[in-house]
Image (cartoon, rainbow, N blue to C red; front, side):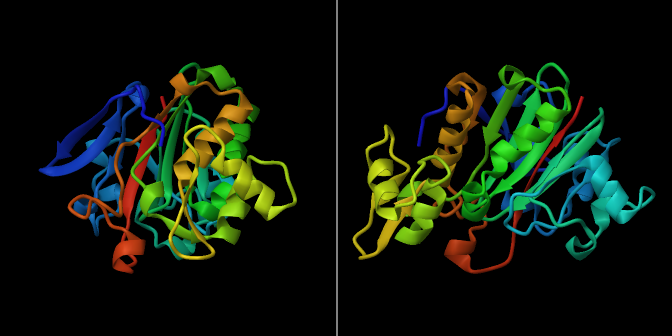
Length: 268
């Protein structure tokens, strides 16, 4: 995984730890730890800003990205979205804002949480990028939504939070090829895998088990951004692994429990 030049800071809210990134210092934001479970974002919104509206979606491991307005249209504008069960929320894995004072949230438990801010418009996005969403280019889809609202690529700041690290994420070669196809234009799974291994800081590593490799999903997302023309200074990747740090993070791969940690950011 690429070492970020940006700094990550541990902070606390009522004694509970969460992470922030210097790249997103313009916006109230946080990558929250397992210590916040089982609270919903509406219950610890004060860690960011107490006076903003919460927007969430029902995450389905796809590449659908909705706006805050679309969330309101789905649930009803008067509904308190922050306390709704996921089954009552629109199916999507990314949310973008359209005005100030909107807090967008996603939850993860090994998948990559991505928070994006635009230093010119003040708008933000929260994206849940698992291997399926990454294979379907959810990050470029979210950025396209921001661009349709006036964002320019050079103004974006993108932070990828704690997720399962490549060195411990064993997947089938078919999964790796699917994800790799998002950056390698080929119909041949073997050609995709071969090409991935020769990239600088390769997103796949060998595994001792036949038919398996280790996959760095955050690195693939980083390469997608690179291919869009987004430079490295605009991207930060957290030096934390959900699987290897049980003291801070839930990991579905490690624990097989349906528990999550939240990540959120407030538009300005």
